[in-house]
Length: 151
Image: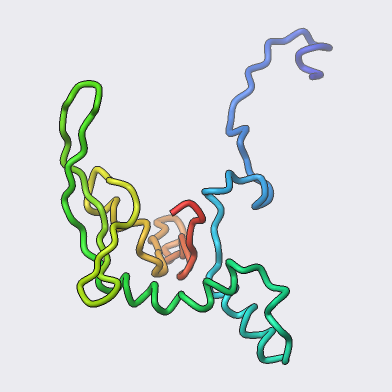
């Protein structure tokens, strides 16, 4: 403001104006759930003799189902699917993840993606790291069992 009003200079504003200072500032589908913490919260309440009736249902469901989810994802595979542009009629080969949930019963996960790697990305909850050339250290870019709400 000083540069613009007092010194009569032109000001060019640059940078990312969408900085999220708190998790609440992030679009809800992009929020990350720490599954290990959710599970520990539920277990801690149970260990201390408390009832989980006051806990949010989604947390109770995550705790009850997470092992089954991981088991189903251990049997995931990428399959080719064909999509069609309804305006032009053009067809495209894309990829989706299919998981065997029980005795040959399969479910499709996620949306069609351009590559097999993109399709798998959203359903791999292992820790991810990268090598930082400046510090010469392996750094964690995503901790294990962090899940985007929007998957």
